[in-house]
Image 1 (cartoon, one colour):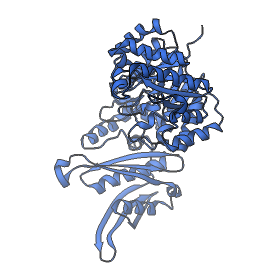
Image 2 (cartoon, one colour):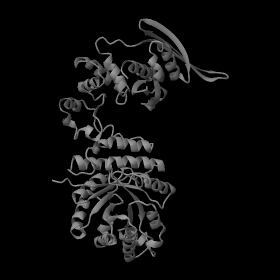
Image 3 (cartoon, rainbow, N blue to C red):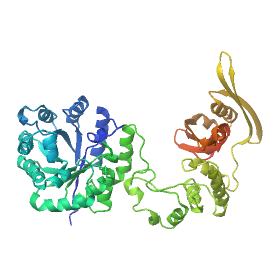
Image 4 (tube, rainbow, N blue to C red):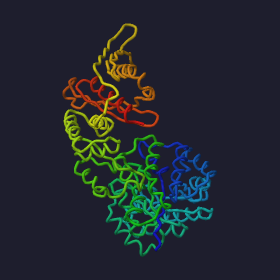
Length: 520
């Protein structure tokens, strides 16, 4: 039995860039388009060639590139009212883009025809048919986006259907039903498509927006109703509340619904693609996205983790590896023994069930005092490591002292002294720094570097401070999170105290100890 094939039409490079805070250069668009082509989507909408120079440049570069799986589409509108496509600048720009596919949108809703285009219902039908036919006559495959289709259908279903027929008469290979305002609910989508299909008898697609948090499910409902094409964006970026998230849609179609939308096995690249698009756009990936978010398969509750250790299916709807993700265990005050045993196994720490209980109790106590270990797994690992039989720490803090003062002609001046015991020897070192934490870091490195030369490769890459109970003023508890990296790894540690220096020292000392003993 043949598996039904659904065309994935990606509009991240056009509709996605209408998202606030999401901007792509022409070079960014090329890089993302190449990744989409490698994934195996059917269509990549590169932009609107008549609207800005970046899109013109993209289409010029796309002409000389080899596309293995995808067809590049240029986007635009029907020709102007009271005119024809042959002398329309927008239509000319579409033809000059030299793409094999052109996608144009037209008005479906009588409100838009009368109040936005300021024309008649008959003239709107004319410009739809003529625009599609003109592009078709110029050798283009044409996809027609029926803008505001569902809102228009609710007001005047007969006219909405006539707009689709006009596009079909012009030669559109697919007509796409658009929920442009994102306000249609799934059962409305289902009912309208059921009513529409007997009289349409032509391939149709779906394009939804997420203003009612229904974009993905509306797309899936449309596929169940017979849609052969789904339009959307990677990670759901788009104007207002975004477009339908193609990442979730592709995963649902292939893993849940028995459809094929990508070349065999390519679904495993969804995680990498999602994070690649966020990285290119210079935005922080959404950790809570389904399937591909960092937290999509993260387990925090002790009961959940205990069950997961017996059977991974107990709290996961799919195996994370099939979309390129992985399961994670989070440690917090909600944890049980299973969380810590899983974390110990993950980092190769050899501890028994009874040995993790003191650590578990300490974590719960520390979290009640302001610590948070969810984003500081290295601190958790070191707490477990110290329970391991025969473990000897690489160094032991004896004392530290920090002095910050203002010196005339030099400004603020910071100096730190640390006394540490290393391999049985007591070392007393001092160092200056750009602030008290930097001075402490420098003094500790000065003491340890001759014993552990790998410290030279450790770099403090981020330092975050959060005030937890600001109503206590200067007596508030301060939480410090330190990110450290070397040539191969990155790790995070935490400290908390009413004294920011003490909090910083704890996070700093854990960071160095973890790096010396665990990180590779």
